Length: 175
Image 1 (spheres, rainbow, N blue to C red):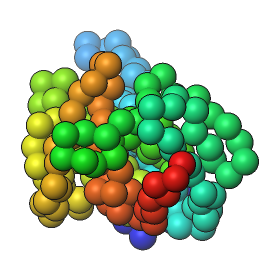
Image 2: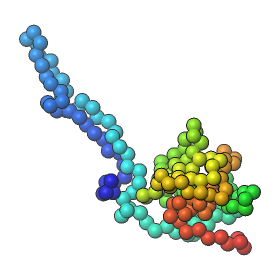
Image 3: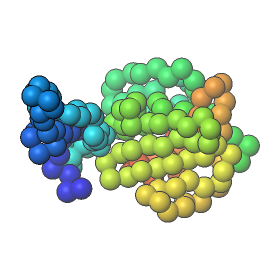
Image 4: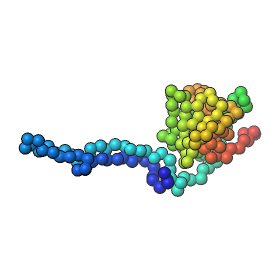
């Protein structure tokens, strides 16, 4: 809770003489493994501690182009951003979130709900396809357009998602 624990899996092992009792029946001794009765993954920390986060670089997406830039590095998405009927810039969620430092394991798709949940630092953002709002840390935030699926990918309005994930958003009409 205080974010001093590093990212990764944490296991819990339960065992010892207090949990597993060795006993005797009819003169025969039955011995059990007291090292570990249960040994399971207890929790996975998926957000970096604040000291592990770094300031991001400028990320540039261009409408109708699958190439985008992170600083000077050119990357390629499998789908291109577009402008929707409400005149909003829609970016592919995974490419955009990855460009902001969100790893794939911190982007969760729920096919039953048709929702995507993103974990970034102290922010948890949940977007449901077709809704005009998203949840950020449990609070509903309105959007002026909705998340959609296009070309089998989830697209979100860049300004809403960017602000939810702590990014500054700008528009350059010339490019």
